[in-house]
Amino acid sequence: MHSVCVRMVYQLSYMREPLMLELFTSQATTVNRATIMLEESGLPYKTCLVVPGRKKPALLQKANPQGRQPTLVDHNGPDDKPVFVTQSIAIVIYIAEKSGILIPSDPRRRTLCIQRVLSHATDLYPSFQAPYFMRWMKPHPNEDAARWWEQRMVGYFQELDTIFSESAFLAGDSYTIADVVAYPGVERALRDFPEVRMFKNIRRWKLAVGRRPTVRRGMAHTTSGAHS
Image (tube, rainbow, N blue to C red; front, side):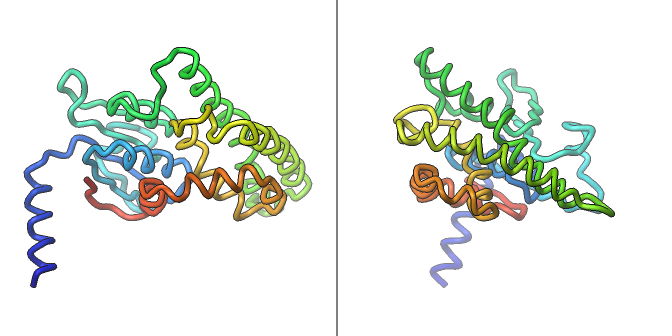
């Protein structure tokens, strides 16, 4: 009975607080960037899982005509009008600026943080994705191309390991949005590619970031629901 009452109190208190943020999700590492950042922010939000093969929600199609995920809708934008944000990194930066956390205010540190975010997005992450796509090609997977991309990926991970040999986190001694952006892909690469597991500094960083309750909750989002 006590647990039922607790749930009812939680539901009633949640209903009184308007949802500002709505995130359309799928089961992808890029989506986890957004869910981790939402958990870090502490802002109330809800997620809507978009199931392949089913009709996409009208709000998602309005916010992102291609219907891709993640897509964020801020129902309480800076001008009291909804703001639509697509692309996982843009979503992470938007939430960081809205909540005022995990993005350095010092110009030098902020520049390094953004540089590391974009380096991960444009250099490391595409080479991480490519081997999967090469092996998923039908009717003839391209194993030679997959191996070429894997070797390129390992080179980028070696650079990442060097960064972590010199600093605790990706943009210095403090946890920032650079770590939020990097974590989901690195976590998956450590599971799927044995070559990546040889980098001890990356493994150390992954364990440290993965212990954060906000990161664990953000990585666990695979269903629709409200969160606060």
